[in-house]
Amino acid sequence: MAEAAVGGDPEHARETGGGSDVSTVSAAAPAEIGLRCEVDGEIATVTLDRPDKRNAQTFATWSALARIGDTLPERVRVVVVRGEGPSFSAGIDLRMFTPEGVPGQESFASAAALGDTELERLIAEAQRGFLWLRRPEIVSIAAVQGHAIGAGFQLALACDLRVVADDVKFCMKEPALGLVPDLTGTKPLADIVGVPRAIEMCLTARVVGAEEAVRLGLAEIAVPAGELGQTTRDLAAALLATDHAAATATKRLLRAAPGRTLEEQAAAERAEQVARIRALFAGS
Ligand code: ACO
Image (cartoon, rainbow, N blue to C red; front, top):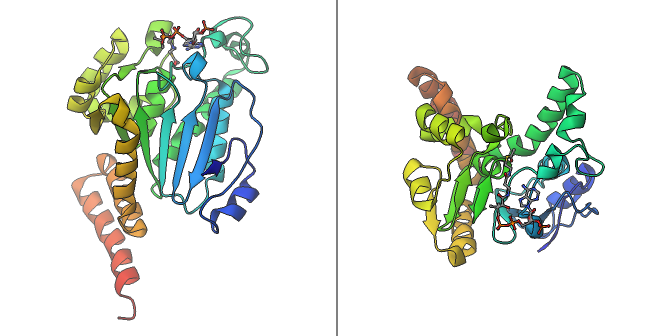
């Protein structure tokens, strides 16, 4: 296994993407990024790596996440997102609420001075770090232990699947700080738990533990903390056992299903299946 993209250039990622089992796309990262990505064969592991600050996230973290998505080798089929240390992520770096902010980055005070268009562009760039995790060609798994607060909760929600340790503590804290959750978390949360439960969770900022997370569908499975890594690896292996093209088409169908009528979805199933049958049986 080797270091991979944190700000790596796309050309290099494409060059290394098709060949050897392990690729290396390296770049020095300032401490505030707190992120590393290792690619090993068909699995990429993105690790929030600032455990002394409970993997607090900054704009630089989100830009680096977006660049990982931009430069992900084509052969990657499973992306695991995990956090080093006792907590998955304590959310946004609270220095961003101070006038000084995080060195070299926007604080909320400096961002507030931007025009609406620039401010929305800044948020859109942050959201880009989360959106790519839904791509049909990959399955993303969040392996979550300890606290997953605010941006940490939203990062877990950006993934297709969540494996949690029994000490997990999900909390959507943004409204309590005067903000809205804007890192693409509101849709998956409302889709998974329903609008009333999502309102209750967000507007009370209460902690959701492992048992409730599984019951609500926020996590696929909860395991003892010591088994989080192995359970995630087992799930990745099971996902990789399925034909890639069929898995991609099926995920595309399932992701789009909530926004379609039954008739539209049936038509989409037909279209995907025609392509599958042609690919599987052409010339036989
Ligand atoms: N931003 C910056 N630094 C942080 C953050 C954060 N979000 N969370 C923790 N840290 C730092 C602490 O300041 C401390 O640093 P220090 O050792 O230099 O003093 C270190 O990480 C460890 O933090 P502790 O509080 O000692 O760790 P503990 O395990 O006891 O508690 C917990 C963890 C519950 C996550 C706590 O740190 C906390 O409540 N953090 C703030 C959570 C928060 O409000 N996040 C914003 C959510 S909203 C959003 O994400 C948009």
